[in-house]
Length: 114
View 1 (cartoon, one colour):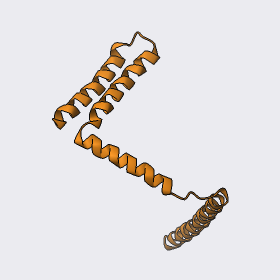
View 2: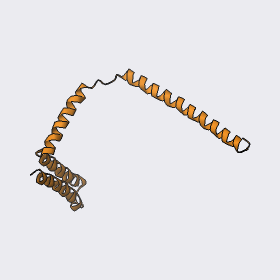
View 3: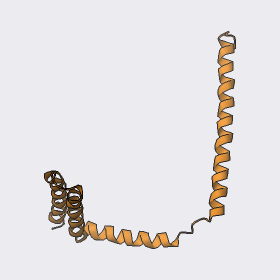
View 4: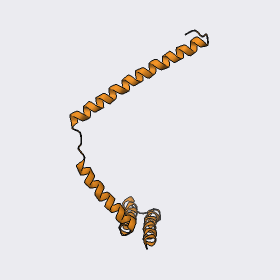
């Protein structure tokens, strides 16, 4: 029965997309509404499958976990961004120095004037 429901959900999505192309003479709002109705119908049907119930439970648990997250303050975000920016600059300079040293070494080994 689950497979039948999922197949019906896929059919509704495809029907919404087909409606989008079938209504090519209509206003864009109606065409987009066709897709949205197809997706909404498919979501409602898919919610009653085992996979849909598991997905709904996962989404509910995820939203509860998001509420537990402690977000950094503006000051902490700016400080962290500053540290990352400084590290990127230092690493770029370090890699530039290594590149320049290796280039000089290769030129020296090939007896080319710098």
